[in-house]
Length: 77
Image 1 (tube, rainbow, N blue to C red):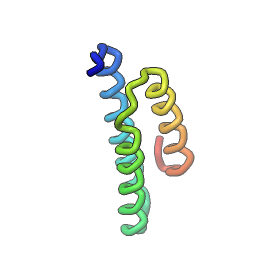
Image 2: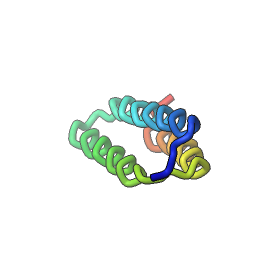
Image 3: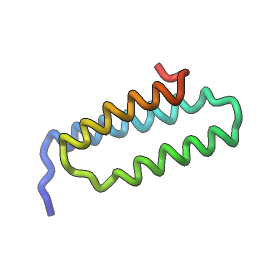
């Protein structure tokens, strides 16, 4: 088992913050079924990337994820 560093714990918090940001941003979707699908998609993306432990990859995915959320969900600030 790989030992996790302080950086990993910090990044875990940033990933959780990104997840919350994405879920909150989806509240601006007026159609309930579209909102439900979007939340399911967001969750599946986070689950799909759950196994990643490389710090550089995680940092990159966080920045890309935030940018994509802003593009997909224009109400996100």
